[in-house]
Image (cartoon, rainbow, N blue to C red):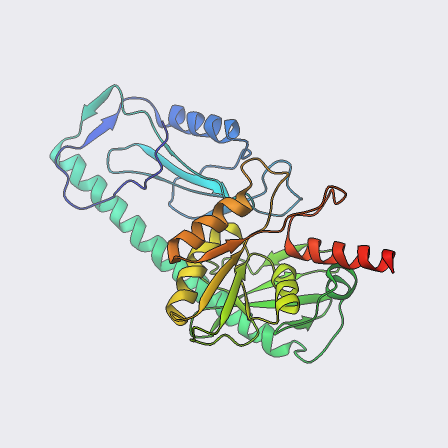
Length: 325
């Protein structure tokens, strides 16, 4: 059984019931559903902690997959899972057939246990985020933030360095909140691999290129990757916001709209034309709808057989122009 809404936990309980099916069966069923949805075979641990993993077919150690599982107040396994790469999100809920009623004492004990687990998890998550925030700010302070060259920017993506830094062999892109505070870093290596700092906050954080203004005369573009938005900025001369992933487009769009309510905002979607459901356009349109904004996406000529984003399109057009000249 699938449910696109998150089950409520705690609070008033009119009738609580418990699965007669074993938890082992529920875990097996959850694993089967995740594999059926082509999201790999992650370890399912019911402690309500968010865990990342590599989905089969993705780059090694990409950790695009995520899962959070717990036992609800009915004694039923609930697992939220998905992929940050494709934007997929699913919820598994154990079958509620063949159930028996919990006693009042059992119900109260289970509710207390779940509430305590939630408090401990929230506390631990906050502590991890604060520790990562400190690490990010210390690393950022040690990095070279002046003009620099890096093979990923210069050779691969052919874009400039805007508000980013170089640390050892990595390009560092800061993830900031609406107040400009750095909470995390995206690290890009010369081979193009990207990683965030472990256990850090990501949702709702973004990187800004250019100088947005709260004015009806200001146009702001929002999109996924740094190179994509750097290309949009260079092409248009307008400020651009890096949201880092499809899953983060809507939270970032909402944050930017609150900061600049008078500005014209355009979501610059990736065109994931080779991926089922085209998550770039799907979630870009969703973000645009959430804030009553516009959205655009790159349209490629037939001879361009590999591109998916505005960086790919702009570089393809430059190379084609060079060939003609």
